[in-house]
Image 1 (tube, one colour):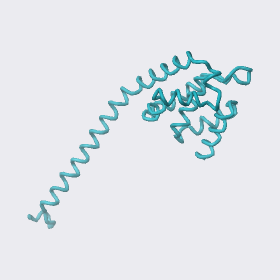
Image 2: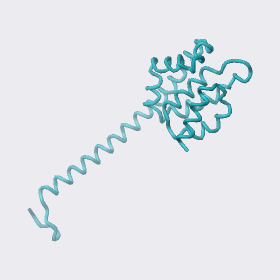
Image 3: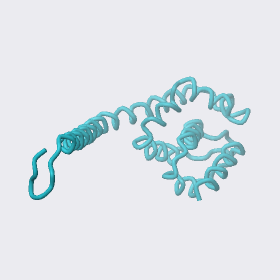
Length: 160
């Protein structure tokens, strides 16, 4: 043990500094990895949403929007869409909100609701992020499908 400036220096103190530097180094490395991943993830999430829209375009809306959306939920679950968009929620939330806004509610016009709109709303509800609260408050009045409306009302009540 040596004395530096009246403060004893110990081997344990030196090891502590090394540990702190290692942790800081890991933090910087994680930040760099996160930035690199974000540049790759953005285009992948956008491509996944376009792919989902194409898949939904080939489905029968009446078949998938009945039974309280059970078939649509099963389609999204079995296709891995829920887990994928939950994992990449930071990039997915604004894109899914945009997808829902782009698809008009058609039910009031005597036609079934839009399948892509219903799917994007279900995924956003499953992500369950308070970031979407404002979006759901804006969209609530345009949601005519009873099951989705109940889900959105429950979501907005939870995130007040």
